[in-house]
Length: 104
Image (cartoon, rainbow, N blue to C red):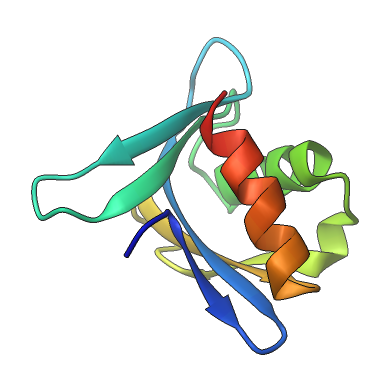
């Protein structure tokens, strides 16, 4: 895998490592884990209770990609730090947008 995402026919799956209860909401670039997989690092102020941190992550990514929040959803890792976000849209355009976020 070359980046923190996998193209799909109707969008992309974005792999994220989320840190809740941070000082500010922000995306911090790419992190390579020990097994060689890459994730977009994100921090949100929200606490990891009742899905608040996941919702904050969806809002953060939607704002960064300039798209509606309804196009983004957490599909895996709901209670874990490593999450998969499904983003609906044109895969090529989304890949370009995510690559731009990676150099934050």
